[in-house]
Image 1 (cartoon, rainbow, N blue to C red):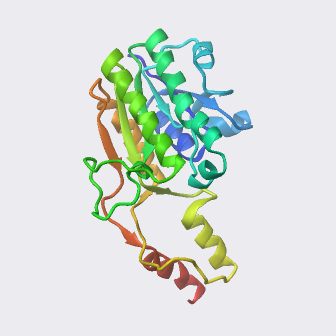
Image 2 (tube, helix red, strand yellow):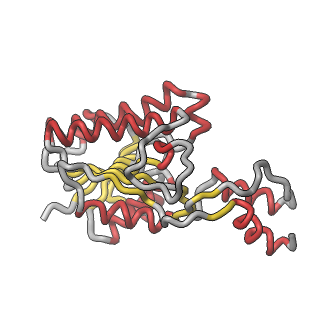
Length: 253
């Protein structure tokens, strides 16, 4: 049985956890993407090899394998970045996805594609929990580009039979993520800064990164030309004020 698997963006937060989870499941994991990584470091994350390069058709061909699957974690992971650099965000998210799909179509048609998308495709919604049937209405370039990538994947699935699955992840957290709300809140609280913007009534669905990576591997069993789209979350929202209250208790506030 083919047990080779490519993780693009394997140096990133989600990518490295997916790589390690795949290795634990018995896959031979090839990592592709950006980032300086010593061999002893990437081996700890379960990689059999690390290829520091752009995610392109030629790079994937250069691996000289026909993997069982590609988990395409490469791409932008920040709304702020997409607002400051919309063209770069488009290239990182949409163009790399097209390159992966072309590799599968031309050179490895039996390869499955798992795409970690984002709940950002939904935009601002009033009804929660958000269901997959909700009409996407992204309000940032980040969400718009994720939706564009999803649409391209769906097109390749319908037109060329690429077996795919899309996971719209909500707020992923975990040790090692040095950005976004939880990290910023812990950093501020450690400095005894107890002032935060907003009303505190904002609600987020938090998903631990180990659960997110396990979900990505589970999706391998469900990828098909029908390109199923699922939400990656708990379905339970937590108010920002409630979460801050729990984080602040050790600081006596």
